[in-house]
Image 1 (cartoon, helix red, strand yellow):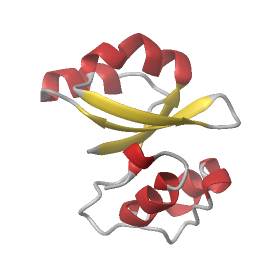
Image 2: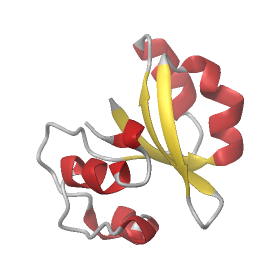
Image 3: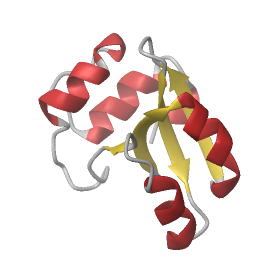
Image 4: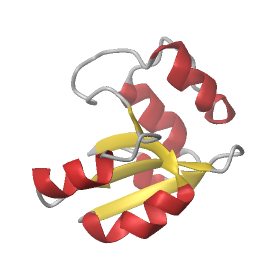
Length: 99
């Protein structure tokens, strides 16, 4: 599963590129998305939008950092959260966001 933040209109226009997805509307008009893509080609095509921001891979153990945390504060995300921790917090609003 790949987690990212994207403009809602881009997500809606390109949702056909995803095998499955769940999202949460954010206050700034973007969406926080958990998605699976059927192929690397589909993922690359979707990701070409300059405002799509990817979180680290969930299994990397990396923290999300200040920039992403600032965009996800309404979900209770802090910069020291791993993507796994972010998925748990987002899962409180939408069960499809849990790993």
